[in-house]
Length: 252
Picture 1 (spheres, rainbow, N blue to C red):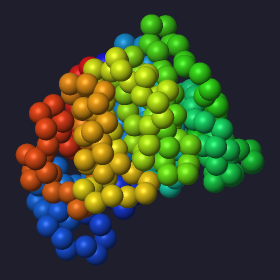
Picture 2: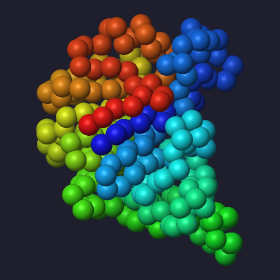
Picture 3: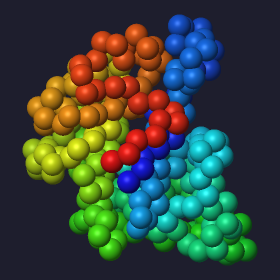
Picture 4: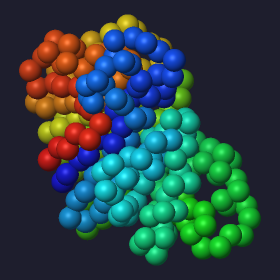
């Protein structure tokens, strides 16, 4: 399984418009962050998690032209507003794309992109998708996809476990039942906004505590704000934990 970080930033992205802080003005490409999203390539399925507003450039930059399924974590703008760009993948592969999310997310996508589902269009002039509510694990041959219910303050959102890999972004609390599902994970990518606390996100110390309590040997922190300068903070993290960055490729 190959995992590519398409975006590791917050809803603002990094740099933030009009900000002159150290991170936003940095020349280090690891401080340039698209909105959070990942691409997973397996022998069975090629999986996109979330369609960020930066999706077009994310796909171009990483030469991605094949997406078999899309998994949605939740329907906030920074995770779904690139949805329309899926039509480019439809045109290339000449097939619909199954999309999965919880009920809250699927209903929001139908509402926010009403034009796609309400009117008749020429095929592939808009995304051609199948929207599916995910309630239980999915099995694609020997590939297992397990939804991971987590809290994003008051919102019920999803992370995903794909075989021995897990991805959880936009998270402020992981319920006990979900923690149990993470016990056998070899690689975890986890939300860690900044050092200062936030009501909707783990901060770095909280994320590190979760990772260490789980005993996970390798983890990366994502959904990182401009308050975090990559090189400085990466040096401060415990062994086995690093900051994700756009374009990072991992093998699980």
